[in-house]
Every structure is written in structure tokens, then in C-alpha cells.
Image (cartoon, rainbow, N blue to C red):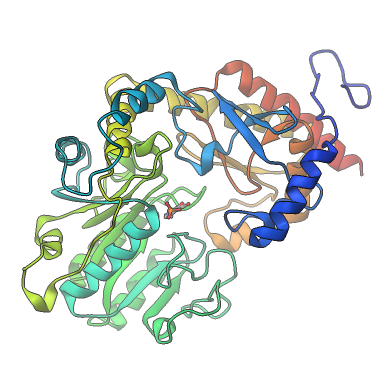
Length: 443
Ligand SMILES: Cc1ncc(COP(=O)(O)O)c(C=O)c1O
């Protein structure tokens, strides 16, 4: 179906309307599942759909409508949907039982592998989610240092626990005070959190030197959501943490096993003390991990020095099915050139979208690295969350709604490519972007 009179080569697939049956299911979901969503992202009213299946670079809803997927399960589906080797791994493994709780050989081998890839990984603990990994990183840092406070950066997302739900969407109105994203947070956390602007070395240096005994940890996404670190910023974190005896935590849940074989810490050449990893590792199954320096990680050891012992447990930690799939994902990403391919595909996505927006006469800043891309609609460089907030969100939201109409499934804040994408898919992204930008501009 075509809209308007697109020029030759500008064909865009417009989705047919949602069926009555799908509308009924959406309403049923809303009546049973708060917000009608399994997460915090609520699709625009009338645009909700239920995914029936995924295949390669596509998802299909219950009406059979096809979407070119740039959400990719919010990051884990780095190989694409239903990758044949992940399916084969699941089939081969499931007959041994999906989960044992007790330690299994493949988990030990995975720890060994990861310790060779990731510069900071002298020891490894498994979790099921990235939130658990960042939570335990912060608790371990407090247990070992005996201090309570920590620094995070405005706009960074570290998961859903009480120590993390601060200043990722809402503005840090009075930095360094954090802004809670949720009610019900344990009292006292607010006093222990300091939120600083990303990429601002001076504010980190000033704060840490003014309070040299205060902080247990600095936690950051080395590549924050869609923003690259400014030259010297991560180095400053490393120096100031060393100077004040503070634990430097990199949240590499997104960048891990995606940005380089040794993850963002290898790409940027700054090695933290603790690293949270997840998403790309799993090929879409629930596995994440916290890795780090031996002198810190050994405080997870049951029976270790009680004053510094950090309790960590989880029923599905080291789950056999997820562990085996992680091995398969690492085979493809590390041993078979997957990471380099992701880099190329990400670059193509950024170029396609940038060309489309330029052709449509739109001002934007294309952000992203490796497999990640996102345009901000502003004429100024975007290097921290204040810049993100001051971009044109009205245009952004309208643009992404139009993309969805053209069958492009991407969150309004970030896009991921996977190894299932090819140049044809990215050309389709470019065509849809040009159409969407022109449609929004003309309204
Ligand atoms: C950088 C980062 N850290 C932590 C998390 C939390 O991971 P999970 O959703 O697996 O708990 C996310 C999730 O999107 C993330 O992007």
C-alpha cells in the first residue's frame, strides 16, 4: 500500500489497520496487566500490537503484520530472532534438563571464556538479569569499602532496583540530587546518591575531591544509552576512583560482547573494577553476569570475612539452557567475526537514516556506535542528558510513530541492528525514514 506519490525507489509499506481481534486482545491485556505492558514502555494508544513470532530481522503481530525490527528484544537478540544455531542449542540442551541450580560444567567454561575476553573479569558471578548485576555491584562496593554513597550519571539506566531508579528519564533538577523515577524507594537512598552530568570530568573531579571519604562506587554506562564518552571522561573516572579508593563500576549490559570482544572497556581502553554484563551474551535467554577484580569478587564467597561479605544468590543463576546459548552466541560474536559485522551494519544504519533525514531537510545529530543508532532532532552536538532533553521530542515522537506506520519497529529512544539485518533491510530503514520525516514536516 502506498501513501501520497512517492518517487520511484521510495516505496514504503504502510501497515494495514489492526484487526478487531487484536484490538480485543490489547484491551484484555490492559484490563489484566497494568499499563497493558510487560515493561515500562507504553505504546501510543491505538498503536499497540501483540507479537506472535520473530524471524530473523522481523517480528509479526497476531494479525500477521510484519515489522522490520530495530528493537531486537531490547538488545539481547544480537543474532536476530529464532537464530538456527540458538534453536539447535536449545533443542540439544533441553533434553539434559533446563536447569539444575547446582553448578554445571558449561557455566564454569563460560566463566573461563568470559574471563579471557573481558579485561576486568578476574572472577565471575552469574545472574538472570542486568538489574541484579548492577544491584550486586553496588552492594559489593559498599560491603568492601564500608562506605554507602555512590555516583551515577544523569540519563544512565542501570535497571529497576532502588539504587538504580534515579534520574534516567526525569531531569536531575538540582544536581547533584537525584530525581526518583519511582515512589516507594527505601528511605535513605536519596541521601546516598549523587547524580552528575555525563561527560563532565570537572564535576566528577570536584565532587570526589571535595568528599574523598564519601563514595563507595561510581557507576556508569561507558557509552550512555546512545552517547559516546568524551575523550578523557572515562580516564578521569578511573583516576579519581583510584585516588579516593572508590570502586569503578561499568554497566556494560548494553555494550558488553557488542562493542568489542572485550566490550566497551576494551574499545575505550579504560578498565573498571566491576562490570555488569547481559543482553548480547544470551542470544535472547535470561543470563547476565557481574565480573570483576578478584580482591572485590572474593567477598561473594560464602564464609568469607563477615564484615565485608556480600550475599548473592538466585534460583536461575547459571541456568543450563541460557548458559549453553551464551556459548553459542559467543562462538558467533567472538570467534566468527560477529562483532565486526555488527559494527558495519550499525554504521550502515546510521548512514541510511542520516542520508534520509538530510534529504528530507531535517536538522538532526546522528548518535550511536557499533550496533546502536538514534537521531536527535537538534542543531547542537549531543553529549549529555541535558542535550538529549533539549532536542525536539515532539518531532522525534511524531517521526517514530510514522516509522511504526511504515512497519519499522524501533523504540523512540534507541535502535539496535543485529546480525540478521542486511543492506536491504537498512535501505528499507532509509526509505521509511525519508518518508516519515517528510510526512511529519508537512503536517
Ligand atoms: C545499561 C543497562 N543496565 C542495566 C539494565 C537492566 O537490565 P535488565 O533489564 O536485564 O534487568 C539495562 C536494561 O535495559 C540496561 O540497558
